[in-house]
View 1: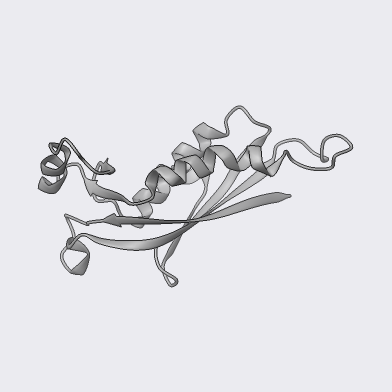
View 2: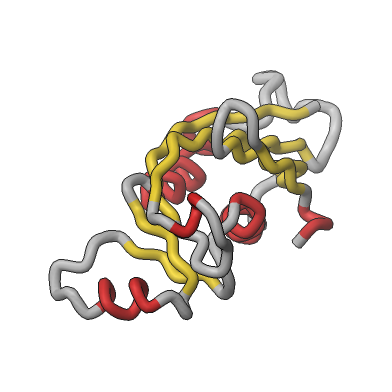
Length: 143
């Protein structure tokens, strides 16, 4: 059995090493869905539930909110260093390489594995939608 939570966030990125329209900083309305599986079976106790959804969602929601209205850049991109010098620097995240949808999904999976390590659930997959037509599905074995 799995449960999932889906969130929306607004984030911009630039693919510095890629020719074409994605070289220009641009934003997306992203959707991310995380799937959690109970490590033990059957459902524990008379409550017949994994855990309280609110407590399961809280760490993931907080992480996703930290991405909202961020700018994701390759740490070698001249824009990254320039913008990081601004004392009012916006929410800028550096990546080793371009912040592609695949790279963002990988970083999310690594974070999700950290967030849920001490709970009786395992992260089974994350689906990150960049647009209604483009998405990445990642599992723990992919990172």
